Image (tube, rainbow, N blue to C red; front, side, top):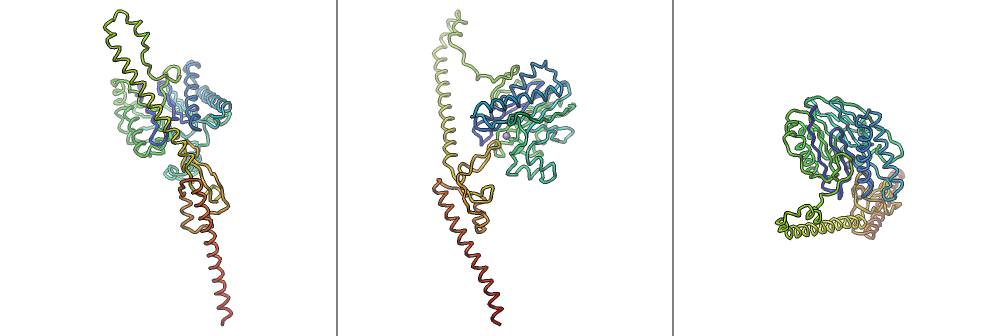
Length: 422
Ligand code: MN
């Protein structure tokens, strides 16, 4: 069966790095969405891809479902071991949704909240189950799909590779037909773009790479709040014909390039070594005429790279500084007013903030308008500013409670007064 393949991974518009990894070379298609710290997520997702792709070539390339599941479990074990051995990687993990395609039979192994969709006969169906808290609630009928997409706890996943020594994986098979399209994607797509819009893109069916690019574009257009990775497979004649004639897509991905055979991380394109070049072109004296221009070009490239590194480092430390110096006042999980350090938001399942100071002031003791303010979060310029906001909240709560008490007493007095007056 002929299959056109398109793929793309993009950092999105909010995150400062891309922790998604993917592999899209027949017969293996994988999307892994890493999480945990600024290093861990990338290490976890890359380790998953690497372990699976190299394990596949060792197994002779014809895995049965059990072998494939074992491979994913060995990736789990490897990520877990690495996280236990290195404090900076502790807590890292990754989703993993993979399909091994032999002829028209797809073997699927799935853990986490990346998704596998099948587009067939005009309908789009999610074949994988989301291993998330909200996914579970949807399956139990306690939440609608739409509510789940906006739920504050939507990024909490219940299963992932690398967070425990053992993991339960979903394994199933699908029969691919002519005129099908398949999509494997990270939640950076599905949290931004709803199924109806994904379907519209797949419906076009002209070219798998165009579809992949378009999906990433839609997610970014909707805010791009997470890393976005998509792998599109298409068996429709038009897509296959387009793939046969199209030049290989340029690598415009945000994810590291992976070697097709080994799954090893690729090096960025190397500038040709000067020595090797002149040794190989001894009789091409006139070539040397290009050398000055060439070396100034290299110098410019080196300067550009250095500048890029400085800018990236600036952005990184700027972000760290910003997180460490941002405070806000909001309700804590136990219903009291607290001072948070960081910014209100989540990154790959982790909070960007933590409670710095917890107070004894109950949110429910505040007057309604201040209760709303606290529930929405009150920004502060510094820790001192946050603390003074807390103390004025405290004063307001005291006044409000006294006022309530007075109202209760006067009501009581009125009642007993009118009773005694007549
Ligand atoms: Mn994600």
